[in-house]
Image (cartoon, rainbow, N blue to C red; front, side, top):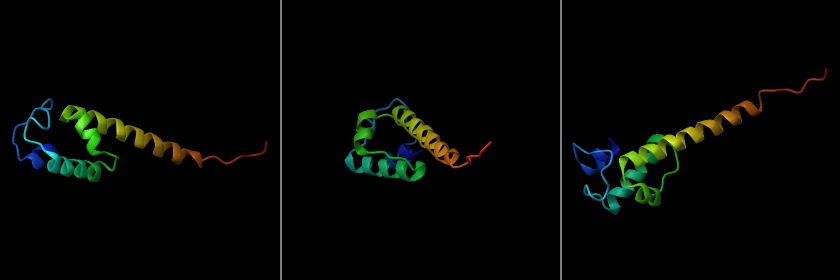
Length: 86
């Protein structure tokens, strides 16, 4: 829905290229900003240009969220144990 809102298009395929459906650099900046805000992940203009489809972006976001959550879990489990003398 980020692409639909920014590009003002009702119907868009996950395989459509960003630039083929009317995207340009100013709209790309908006997409990057919205992705970063919504998902709280690193996402760059370069990454958008490399993947250029909703399908590619969804895959990237899913992987980035998985990595972020895995790192958070590692941090959380690090302090849960206390050394005991037996």
